[in-house]
Every structure is written in structure tokens, then in C-alpha cells.
Length: 439
Length: 121
Image 1 (cartoon, each protein chain N blue to C red):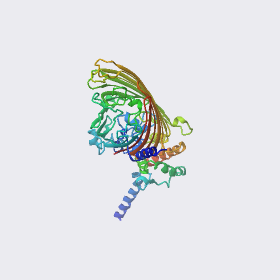
Image 2: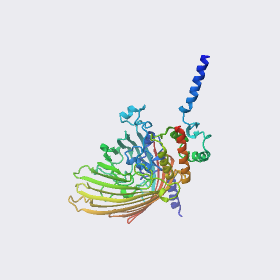
Image 3: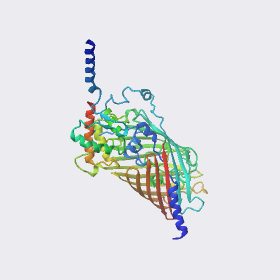
Image 4: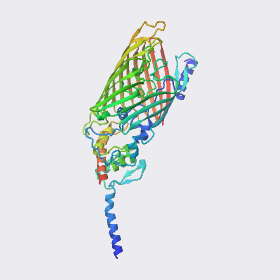
């Protein structure tokens, strides 16, 4: 081994230990919920912001705290013991629909990375304060949920996009303070089972919100982009969504999104089905304590979604009509978790030739697959491995991503990740270390 | 004489009311290491108790458990009754890092229901 090569390996190793990196993900753990509901972060997260079943259900139910209850639908309530119904010293808050605590949180990430094949532009090794973010979320009298996430500072790629430009106003810009998400969700509108969400939303498509992961690198199925189009499935946009939970086991969502500078609305829909474990409303499937069955521990969530829209991808504002659809499954068994995802799409004008106002149009078909296995060690460590196959119609890329996430505290974590990327044009590896804290 | 009789009557009245004013589940200590007095527990429940406290405290203080049982309310404001005990049992069994076997959860559910009953007296 040459001295140069050993120095390189040493540098990579040292880098991984000392710093943070480039493609840091964004944490969406909300310590405000801990204060509000008097429960620890681990109730809703493993290594944050990856969600537990309880966390998933909390999110689906407009951030209304769900009682842990049995399979019987007629959960009986003791009115005298229910502080929300009886007289109590917080009545003025209830009548005003105000949360007891100002539900604010701040989170931040500091990242370091080393990419061995990056052009030697002085940034092969990089340190970056990835983001500092203000978050507010909660519910008002269990009738109205809200979520607000505002980037006080960001640096580096945001949301999987590497070249954010002003062409698509619905993708958060880079390096400036910016609104990430801001919406309210009216719960059980007019006593119906339907919830109505409006604002700057991330449409309920994937089983996993983009931040619901332990890794630094986003899941390709919801973050991949095609050609010059800035669209990706987990992008936030102004829109409305109707969603509902049917019989506790089925989650349905559908809605419309309005992009800047375009006449046509975009539409989306999704369905998710829960098998085993707690249902979407927190009802635990009963357990027979006198016999063993793997089904007592097995929880599966299956999902499918579709999105159809159009955007302007070039200076001549040619429309790119596109669609995406995908299927996913999330399987949990004791300490094991397996995520499988697929996404498919078509863009009819994904690449713009700036020399031609009317074309030529370049259509692209895309398909992406991802599989990720995780294992929880103790309460603080999650090693995982993900494989991704991405064909965006021009380039085929394979990614191999081993990760080790460690929650030093429930609200502070460190993630070490190596991402090896092979495509028909290049091959490279990036070592990432991310430090994230929220309070 | 009259005054003495009155005092005795008042003492007798208060001593008789005392058990009504407090739940039977007597706690010992405060905070994470809170316990309950198991002197009068049936032997089967006494046997479960040490393992119960050992497992619960892995993730949270024992005050959360015992205050919840005493008040019938969880810290987040949900009702904690027999049905909730069953549901929490299932939830703890499925919780990946709870490290509880099915037999343990079964015994913990029995103990919690017993304590709930005692607390309601």
C-alpha cells in the first residue's frame, strides 16, 4: 500500500470521526411533543427521526395523542377522570383551544463528508452546518392539528435536490431561510371520519415521510429526480388533502397541488393497509398469552400511491407532463425492520434544450427500487443496510449504503454512513458523519 | 368528662374514615425509585413484583407506573383501566427494546390489574 493511499484511508477515517457531512438529512423530531404529552422521545421514535408505530399513528391522527387501547371499538371513558371533559384548572386553555405549552422546538445538524472521486476542487472533504430549523406542531382541542417547519439556515443540498433554482417555486430554495412545511389539518370535519389538510404540505404518498429514516441519505424512491424537472415525491407544495382512516386498518388520502406559474392542478392519491400490531388509531391487536405465534410480533404496512402533474422545466416554459406511482411495504418483527419500496414514472419533456422554444421534447421513463434492513441493538444503536437501483431514463445507478445510527441521548444522535454509488458513467464512495440534536 | 367523650368520638370518627380517604395501594418513596408496599399482597403477586419493577425501570421511572395505577390516568391523560392494562401489555410485548417475554407480560398484566383493584378500594 502506498503512503499516499494509506494517508487517504487515514484521512477518511479521521474525517468520519471528526466531522459531519454533505447529504445530511433533516430531522423532524419534535421535542415539543415530549413536553406537551409528558412522554419521552423513544415513545414515537427509535433513533430519531425514525418513527415507531406510535409515532406513525400520532402523525396520521393530526398530532392528537391516541389512547393505548384494546381491540374493542367501544373504548369506555370515565368522564370524571377525563380532564378534558370535567372541570379543571386548565379550562381557560381548553376553551381557547390553546396548547398548554408553546409548542416550539429547534433542531440542527452538523455534517462532515469525504468523497474520494469528487473533482479536487477543495471540497473532497467538507464540513457543513447542514441546517438549523425551527419547528412548531401540535393539536388544538383534538380538532385541529398543525405543523410548521422553518429553516433558519440551510447549506448544501436540500431535499435531494442539488441544483435548486427559481424555476419551481414549490421546492424549498437553498442557503436562505425558507419555509419547509406549514399546514393545518382539521380533524373529523363535521363529525365525519374525514380529515382536511391545507397549506404547504408533503402529500401523503409514501409510507415514510422523507425524514423518517436513520440514514443520512434519503430514500431514492421518494427523492429521485428526472432530467431537469425539480419534482420529487417528497417535495412540499401548496395544496389540499383529504384523508381518512377506515376501520382502523386502512388509510386513504387524496388531494390536489397548485404549482406556481401553471394553470393546471396536480392530483394525487394513496392507500395504506395495516396488518398486525396497533392499527392506525392505536388499537392493539389482542394477544393470546397462552400460546406463541409469530403474528403476535409481526406488523406489516402496505402502501400504494400515484401522482400526476406537470411543471415548467425550461426557460421557454414548456410543460413537462409527468406521473409517478409506487408500491411499498414496511415489515417489523421484534427488533428487525425491512423496508421495501418501488417507484415508477414517466416525464414527457424532462430535458430542455434551451436552443429550441418548442422542443425537441425528451421523454423519460424511470423506475427505482430500494430495500433496507434495520436491526435495533439495545435502545440506542441501529445498524442498517440499503440497496437502491435507480434508472432515471438516462443513467442507471446502484447504491450500497451501510449505516450505523447511535442515539447518544434521546434527542441527540450521530450517524456514520458510507454510500457507494455505481453508475454506467462513474463510481464513487462518500463517507458521511452527521451529528443532529433537537430540543 | 363531656369534653373527653367528644374527643374520643372525633378520634374514632377520623380513624374510621382514614381507609376511605386513601387507596389501599400504599406507595413507598418518590420519583423513579418509587415502590409500593407489597406486605399484604398475595404470594403470587409478591413473586411477580421484583421482576415487574426491574423491567419497567429499564425505560421509565416507577413513579410513572404506580401513579398511573393509583390515579387511573396515564401522564398523557388517558384512562388507565383493565382494558388499557391489556392493551399496554400487548404494546410492551411488541416494543422492540422492552425485552419482555410473553410469560412475563402475562404476569405483569395480572399484577397491574390486581394493583388497580387495590387502588380503587
